[in-house]
Image (tube, rainbow, N blue to C red; front, side, top):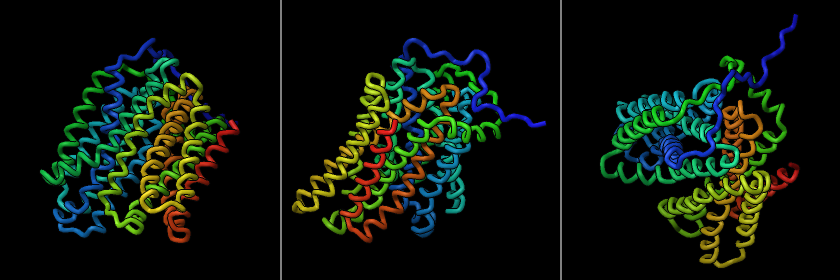
Length: 404
């Protein structure tokens, strides 16, 4: 006798009911937690030289640390993020924060590069607490505020990413690279304890076991055409995003004789994109998330088309155009992301963590593909080839969103 598979969501009694309004202090707590969790992924990037010298290792060996951290993050999204639908997110966030703090302390105390590799991988897995906080914000917010609240929490997450390199670079230069991880461990532990006490209880929305929970990812994928379109479009935008950023430093050095400090300064343009996230949330509430996604994709495609056309300008004008395009396309990418998150969270409230995991997995795949394609485009087509690739990918995202 055949046994039917469990549904994608098996909802227990008395699920969490969103309150009429979400206190600004609670939104700030969620945004801070998301930002700090995401920031830990990028602590190592400015510290690689200090790590190599301090551990007596080679730059190549130490260079694996950020790669392992990102790999751990991708694994954590796929394997742990769905647990937010099965367990009280408040407790899950607190437990991950304690684990992440321990992994960061392990990094700070690592006696050699191999121990640091292992600690970095574990830290990446547990840094996914940021991706438990975003669905928690969507769950806590009432329908009329959901887009705005998600946008505000995403602002905190994005600012954490942008400011993490500044924090780690300055503290590492002053107190050494181990101090960065030690201070980071204390901050994460503190925010985890505050979240565990300050967030309301969020009852599980499914009773599926772990294996069935992961298997339900496939069921959700097949059930929701809107999810597939969102993943495809955001993945294409991520190809453009990653292709640009993975080749920028080389282009600045080769064409303009500018060093890594200037390439890093371009990252400050991302602050504008982060500040655009709350606006995208408000627009999603007011006009609908699909329309907002289309606006974001159009901004990205137009920005890169303008960058390609700017090849005819003098060098000084080209550099100014690159700055303007960086601000515009980053804004567009973040607008589209917030719109897509608002859209997919509406599909099945009992599966928000799993829906978020699928969306972010598509993003990471897009970024990996974009990095590989960007280097090939630069090799064979120069900067114009990169701009053309980015314009084509983002135009593809816009066209895909015209289908619904």
